[in-house]
Length: 219
Image 1: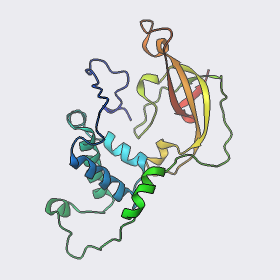
Image 2: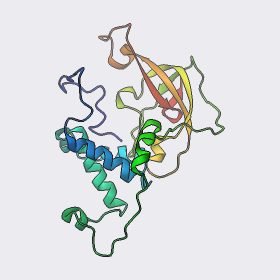
Image 3: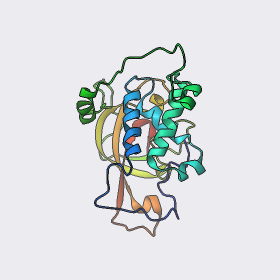
Image 4: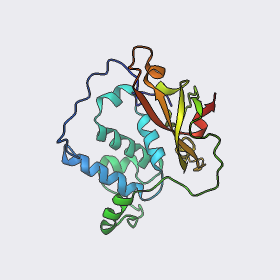
């Protein structure tokens, strides 16, 4: 979808501060939000693309006001309510409603280290012929879907060259809407900086994006 989350190519958004000693979590509550997302996500009521899409649905003014983990928390609350894992009354009281079932945890403490180390790979070993080849010129489609997509706006309608075929991966656009994984080929596409930003960009610079096959069209 087109939203404030897609900041690539926007101007006048200010400097991005960089610290070599940046902590993983700035406050202890951020670590708890991370843990809550992992623990509830283990129930498989949603997937990573659905959770990204939920964060993208935060209204623009709120999105810019919030910190990174505030967005995670806001989206998690919405997902918990949507899937019926908690009720509004439980959120407000901090206590389980009378008669609510007690669910066994899906992610045990001793499993956390291994789970974080390996994650949930999105590559799939399924037969799928590639429609594009390394070295081929392609154009990113000028698409504006209502749902989740990993094709940034600044690259839409721009031409580049495929430099790598990563293989077959879960297609996020359908996965986020619970329409199935529909695995597709994922390519690295190199765009010249001038193709993206115009003649004022450095002719020696380029940007490489990992793009799924449905995002691309032949030239």
